[in-house]
Image (cartoon, rainbow, N blue to C red):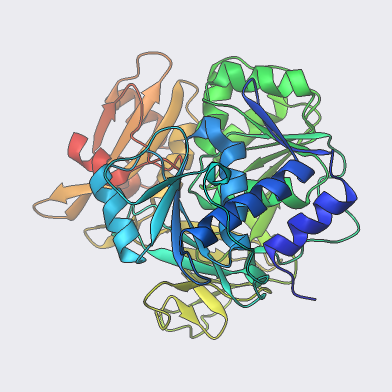
Length: 473
């Protein structure tokens, strides 16, 4: 049976009102009973302020306000409105642009009011309260989540209650091996929204930090004896570089939001000796469809196989199948109600239940997916098409390299030349790196340009921002 987020929260609060759902370490705790009561208070406050079912309401909260955000998010949904989670690092101009794009009627915020916008404090219970509207229906829109915009203008992705609540509410709670699940994903990202759903439905209490540093995050894991940990590859690299060792409480370490380099995954098996290192591949448009890959040295470059009733295939831009083993565009299918772009429901990204991922890849004879590159990142250099993922994997094998990102830079003859930016733990010359790569890459794949940076530029979701990186070259 299709469910909604308010149904699920109400049921959990009724059966386990005093159970901790979410913790912001050193700041706040949230039980299911308080979560449900707080959401109803927010819903009444929104109703009293004229918010109607279907209206869009923005949410702007900092990482230290995760519990307030969870209450506000579910309150918007309980009011029948559509929640629009926003990055707390957006400029006032960008914030206005996104709110205007989805025609939001207002903005719920935490402690800091983000500028001269129609804003309401998340503590709506302090004002006049209205009546609760009827519960939303599974096919009603619940959320508009904006893409990161690293390859173009951010787009609002609409998810219904049936999409967000797919697979939830079962008798067996996810991650039953854990009492605590630790993460450091930011609010306003698809990974962050997945953690909110985990807090609502999974067995462990979800624990996070007001501010991520590798030392604090490692201490958080140790303090709570977290059995499950989720992070992005950039955070995993920071943990390893901080010398984290033997966090033996962790039984599952999940990496999301970007491909996990094989050399990094191998090092994680040493820092987390009892953990299964798992890579999750999805997108804001495709969720909850995903592939999952438990690290396998025999398949170091794979992002796994489709799970939980979903599907993955390699096809052309119009969705036509290609020959097995051939490189083509990656398409995924979700078993849940599909998502769509706000204001553009007929986009070519969504076709017959399939979602065009924007990645190039191939599938082997056992059904494992291998990514070749982001379609927008693939480098056309002379007569060759060069994969940045392949280059980065090779660069990461150098023991001195901490982080790496490859991209194409303008070239008067070839069109694009191969460039790579690295962060290193010891001096590494461009020539030494090229010599190291000659046995690992074809001649046309060896970088022409190499620069060393203190850190790679990243967006709020932890992905390398290659448009900013290109400016450095």
